[in-house]
Length: 184
Image (tube, rainbow, N blue to C red):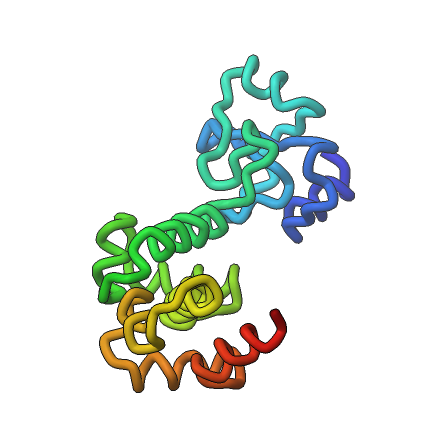
């Protein structure tokens, strides 16, 4: 192992991913340099130029950095994507953080932190954005009243719908609908 390789492992430098892999004797796993697992003891590290060489030597791909899945973006990204899917599938439902966490089999605090770190949004804010996106589709593509559209988008009251919609679009749902109709 060179000093440069050790420095890449220590700093978890993703720029070195694919250039080499390191195996840890104690855990029998092989990782990318950017792996977020605990820093290994240098004496326990073996460097491989190809993942296949490490696997042939008896090491298994790390379950944290997944060197065997080159397109994999990481556990936090995967969790955020699963949370987004859940919210998009259940946007009309009223649900709690506990319910989403239970459905995804994760701790609610971990879910909340991961989602915020990856998307920059809170789960509630994202839920409201999805609801308002659906409301926009109905506002521009149907003759339904604003109150009915709010309910179809999952809002319990028209006043809450109007408040959330205004915070996202800087206008009321009625103003949005009128603006769209005037542009036709």
